[in-house]
Length: 218
Image (cartoon, rainbow, N blue to C red):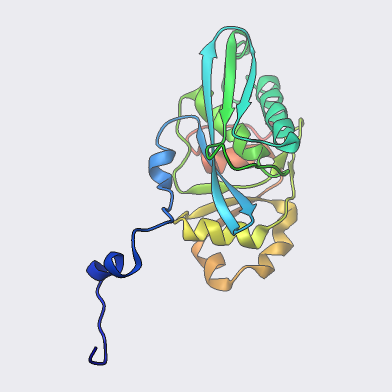
């Protein structure tokens, strides 16, 4: 070949083959109520993780799928208990879960998943489903939730924010107690992201579902 060699976009597939990695379309995935975008750390670094919630009439209870470990299963139970206990404050009927079975699913079921950081994402997926309102498509979140609605700190902040930035998210919700970890995140990533540091779940919901007015007690 005669140098310099110029390669345009139309030649990339011919030279490198078909793409082996397909980035998730966050706006498309979160366009319906019941889907929230979480942030996770995998063996390959940070990644976005979608939590899906659905409901059916019948015996109350919780079904969990997606190869989740014990810690994430506990997070799902806590999320459901929190929503049930705070239904009125969240704008839901007190009996909204009395005759409803909830199904929580994390896609890519062949990949094992575990860790104490999906609690607020699961809670948000449930609230979105039960209110019938989609979660804002540009928001990702990570953090654990307690039965009292406190948001607990997590690990892997740098990897998770890099994943959020790569996925095109504009806003991220983190536990307030992870504020010091932001020093490890590249400056250009911090500048591109609107970061909410939450102590309680009402602050998470204000970022994820801004049209829902939730008192601070939630």
